[in-house]
Structure formats: C-alpha cells, structure tokens
Image (tube, rainbow over all chains, first blue to last red; front, side):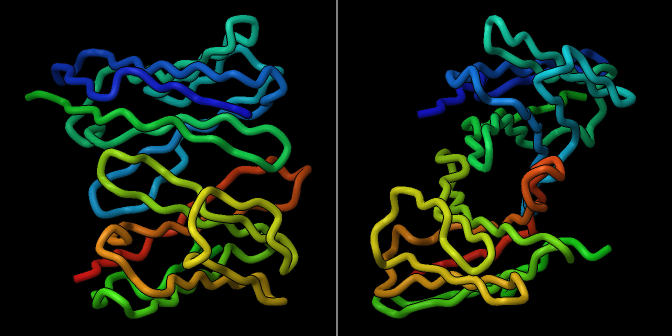
Amino acid sequence: GENVEQHPSTLSVQEGDSAVIKCTYSDSASNYFPWYKQELGKGPQLIIDIRSNVGEKKDQRIAVTLNKTAKHFSLHITETQPEDSAVYFCAALRDDKIIFGKGTRLHILP
Amino acid sequence: KAGVTQTPRYLIKTRGQQVTLSCSPISGHRSVSWYQQTPGQGLQFLFEYFSETQRNKGNFPGRFSGRQFSNSRSEMNVSTLELGDSALYLCASSAPQGYGNTIYFGEGSWLTVV
C-alpha cells in the first residue's frame, strides 16, 4: 500500500530564513498532494496543494514542488515569520485514499 | 460557507464508558472520514463514509465504530473506553471524486479518558 515518509520531524529556523520540508511517497499512481498546517489546539488547515500534472505551485511565501520520477514533493516557506510555527503534514492521495506523513514541527526562532 | 463542525469540542470520560462524537461536513460534501491524533503518532485513519456506506477502514479495534446519515452528517462511537483512547479525534469532509478530493478538517474533539 501507499506509504508517505516526511522529513525532518522537527525543524528550527531563524525568523526570516527559509524552511523546507520533504516527503516521499511509494505509490506512483498517487495524483494529488496536499499540505496541511496544524496550530496548537486546532485542526489541520489546507495551505497548498499540487496535482501530478504540475511540477511547482506557489502562493505568496509558500511553494510546493513535485518530482514524479523520484516520487517526492517538498514544501518551501520563505521569509519565515513567528506565525509559521506549527506542525506541517504532507499527504498523498490516489482515488479516494489519502495517506499522511508523520508531520514536521516547525519552530521559528526570534 | 460553513466549515466542518465537530461536537463536542472537549469531553472527559471514565474508563469503561462509551462516547459518541458528531461531525457535520461542509454543505455538499458526501464523504466524511475520521482520524485519531495522539502526540507523536500523527494522523491515524479510522474510517471513511460515503453516501451512508463505510468505504474504507483503518486498523482500529471493533470498539471504534461510525455511521453516516442521509444528510451526510456522521457520528463515531467508542465503546469500553481505555486510557489509550485519549486523543484528538478529527473529522474531515470532501466533495465527491471529480471535484478535486480536497479534504477539509474540523477543529476536532478532544477526548480525555480518566
């Protein structure tokens, strides 16, 4: 079955620097890759997603890249701010089945 | 458009009791899935319902059950509660296949078993 590996599990970056979180998936038929941000005490919120027919997508300070050949996708956050501190989850979806990564706890240091 | 609504937000139960959690999906969404989230365990898939039928099921014991009503609202039930069932239970809804499958989460129900 599908497996999604997410790295790193914890990431600390200086405010203003960039953060990169990477995920790999095993099922080459997966065709949709969302990223979620979960703040303390809240449910995960969709922040950006990408489909398998696209290599890169950007939304202000957030971007996601997809390498279908290597079966990995990454979340890039530029000019990080204190409010970016949260847990981030990647996911891979095929048909109606979605598999989540274990999450990355991002700390933005002042 | 209202988001996914879960009730109750917080509850405390005693070992051996049972609990029912409720979820109202986004209007028009017919797929509802449930997840258990504990510290360090990420999102553990419980089950998914579509048009009142369970379509997928995770690896949880039979004490965990769910159902979906004709209006797409869903409930999950945990019987004979154990201390290890303490967790955040998340409900998510999505539109039918072909509409992007984007999954939206509710704020969750925090269950503490004492």
